[in-house]
Length: 66
Image (cartoon, rainbow, N blue to C red; front, side):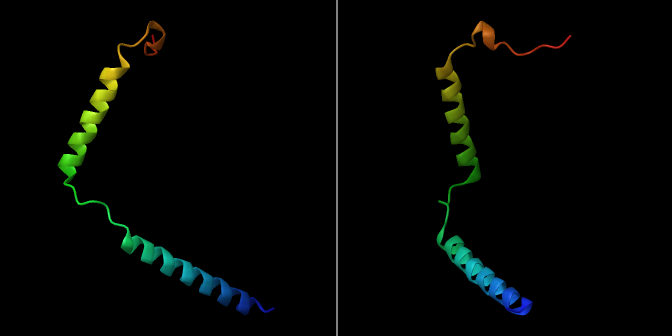
């Protein structure tokens, strides 16, 4: 087998995979929600998680340097 043949096969396989990925990317669409709304709901979710976790235990104190 010649080195040129190997390169051609590699290039063909790469082109096929790239076309598959581009097709998948075109089909995949995130829901169109405004960024401010998404950030707001994320902040609400984080706040609720923090509220449910309760106060930190004595062993969970942050590390202090001198």
